[in-house]
Length: 592
Image 1: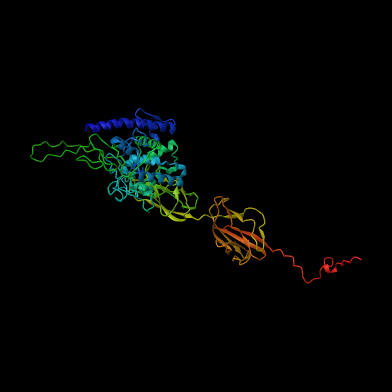
Image 2: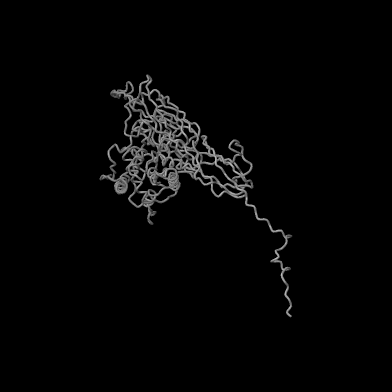
């Protein structure tokens, strides 16, 4: 025991020094105005620097985490790193298991494509993964990235932790009373329900899979259009994952450590962290990501060190009975506790064209059973259905607190490209009360005007091809109408919309003549250039009609001129030119 304590003390001194150096580097390079205290902790400002995040709105429900700090040695293994027990452990602490590292890097690449402005570094995912689960318990994952055994945090029953009642009927955490953080990135079920992603392409969103969890964590950190290269946004994102200044400092320490370099180690060989934020003297730290063991007489999740209530002695034993205890005063109800139902607060028709922002915003009112407004209640708006429409910032869930009149107004909806109807569900965060579903519809992109670009006449000779392409521009309300469907058809006449069977034509992929094109779309600037036009042997004036979704129409004249008449060949039977006929030339007269 003495050796163990000594090692822990030595490690504590070493890691504190590392934390001081790491956070100092971050402060100098990323956080102007931030300071570092004598314990190596970054001072990120007063309490206002942390987001006002309730536990069930954070990724982890503010669950416990590992507080181990990076080792003093360089992240890159030295030639002697593998010699001896200390060297083996140092290399294991510095390295990241192969599959886990691959998941972090794949998530970074996906976010670089989907949300380039977020500037998410994979090292941030590695730092959070280290603090949350010790890199999936040292990389104990299967070939597809699923943890060998589930990783669960303590049940969030309000005893020493946040109170988050069951939201998934035990589907993820096998607990039907309270929620627990799940998987290598420690998502609580209520957050995973909207933040979950399929990172390994197997068609499932599994919080126990490191590829799924890493991608979900990346999207979670990149919501609200945060730019993680900005110190302020970086701090907000980390604190939204777990709202603790100590958590922020620990993650920043590992982030700086991994930025200096790291190396890949085999799956299952990573060092397991030892120190947890919920540790108490006399309690053995729990296995990574599992519920800490309770002392006899305590319930899972109850703070260690709690004593069981004294039991009264049996009658006639002579042992004194335990003194009566005074029950604690009842906890006053919170505003959320008083909500009986939600009501719509005058929301209008929710319809928008694809790619446009909805003019109407959803308004919901929280009420008691008597119909009285309830302020300071968090309302969660969730987009449900097959749609790519999102709230501002690209997320499918938004949480808004009701104002003094009990009303929460959701952020504006941004229509995607998928058309059709879906729903937005309004519910009370942390309560199962009657919510409000809202029907939302996205219509196809349309144009109300179509004009030709350029004024040059479009002509060619019969049997030739038009040198000038047909270029048009679609607008809606005077603004460029991008991605609008356009149909181009060569018609018989202005009065006869039937397809013409002669005159100009387009060519299909096989080079065959076609006179109707569908599936055309304007570009982002509303402009469209049609494919090259050709002419058969028929001369005359022809009509090209273009129509758009929304009814805009444009007719363009095409002129085909007759082919030039070739000069006739000379008649070989005609009399030859006497001047050139050798038979008319005078013969030479023999010399006398």
